[in-house]
Length: 64
Image (tube, rainbow, N blue to C red):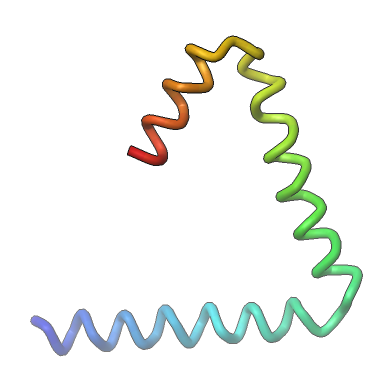
């Protein structure tokens, strides 16, 4: 069973490496991805509200 999990892990990692290589060939694609992530990080706290209690609940869920 460990060999089977290992082969899936290797397959998954090689697939991720291929996707990263294909998507980083164009600079505008990389900039778009990072821009999208930045927008999500900025807009998420605005969407749930500015109260400290809500932000504490979310941070406890994700960061322990």
